[in-house]
Image 1 (tube, rainbow, N blue to C red):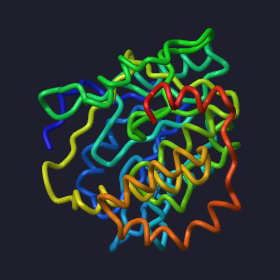
Image 2: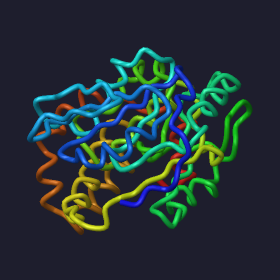
Image 3: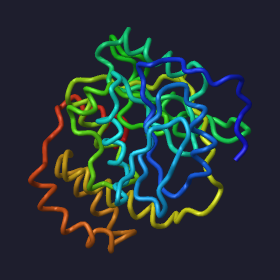
Image 4: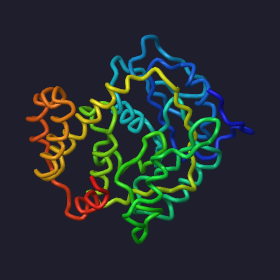
Length: 280
C-alpha cells in the first residue's frame, strides 16, 4: 500500500466522526487512521486478536457483524454527521469539513457520497464514474445528482436520519448492503447525493479475496432486498436470474423468506420509479 503524500494531520472538524469497521487488518489501520482529520471510532469486527489503534477509540465485538458493525459506531458517535471509511481508505484533506458545509446548506440531504480515487495512480473508481452520469438529475435542494446506491467507504451520513431508518440491515452481512439503506432513506423523504467535490482515496489489496463468494453473497442480498421492498415482478426477476446462475443461493435464502415477508414494506411510488429509471 503506497499512500498519497500528505502534509499535516490536523483535525479539521469536530462535527464528524469517522467510523471504520475492520477485521484482522491492523497494519492497514495504522496507515489510514492517522489520515482522518476528525475523531475516529474503530469497530473491531471480531478480529482473532484484539486491536489497539493510536488516535482512535476501539470498540471490540466478539463476533463479525459485517456491515452492521458500522451501526454501533454511529450509535457511539456524538457528532451530527458520521463518515464511513474502510481500513484501506481515507478522506482527502478538507473533505470532512466540506461535507459539514454541504449538510448545513442542504437540510433535506441525509447522505453524501464522494468520488473515489483508487491506488497511488489516483484512478477514478468506475462506480463514481457511473454516479456522475446517473439519469435521476439533481432535485431542488439537492447537494448533487440523486443516487440510490453508494460505496460505504466514501459516504457521510446525517446521524439522526441514519439511525431513524435502522442503519445497515444485519441479515445482509456484507456486499450490496447499501441498496436497502439507500431505499429506506429515500422512502423517508431524504435526498441522497453524489458530490464529486468530495474525494476519498482507496487502496484495495490486489488479491486475496474470494470473488466467487462475494458474487454469491451479492446475488443473495439482491433477492432478499427485493423481497423486503420491491414489487413481485422485481422479486421474480431476481429469483429467475439467480436460478440460472446460482441455484444453491436461492435454496440457501429460503430460511430468511418468512422473516423478510414479516418485514416487507413497499417503497413510495416515486422511489420505485427512480429505481426503474436506474435499471434496478
